[in-house]
Length: 198
Image 1 (cartoon, helix red, strand yellow):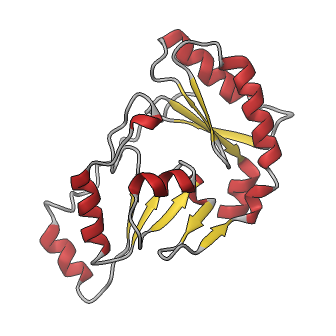
Image 2 (cartoon, rainbow, N blue to C red):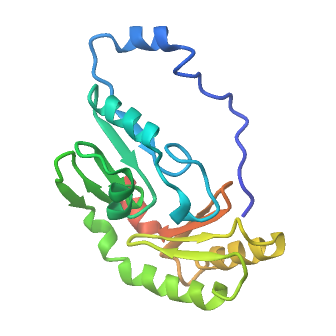
Image 3 (cartoon, rainbow, N blue to C red):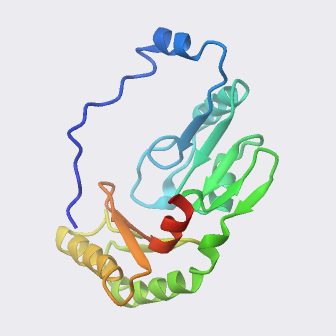
């Protein structure tokens, strides 16, 4: 599956348009949604290397004192909460399938739990096909699987992505995927997304 590249213009910078933004928000309380990987931390070669630095943590804490802040991540909820380590934020792990409110309230979207066996089977299938490939890392999460292949050679990258994409082919129609420019392939249940989003 080729990576789609958008030709849409970049959104305006909030920093360079701060006066106009402040005018639009006058009398309102905005909510800020931030991603962990690639927003709060740089994209790194392996997921465990993505660490939030002290200055960024302090900036997020200061922002949370002004308005609601949500950290939305493909990581598991417990992982992203531990990595950010700030109380009073909303955390959405597993792309929103596992959410904790600012005081620890928790919600698991029940639509996703029925597909956990399919995700486990897909993880086992991917491990069988990909675990011996150099530079490929399979990261099992509660509601998804991520195949990281940015450390692999181009041929191995294509092989890893193709194996992940084949999981979406019939008869395993309950699995869908998304290949990204960060050289990873996220595998999740398509029915879960349909039920949760639409």
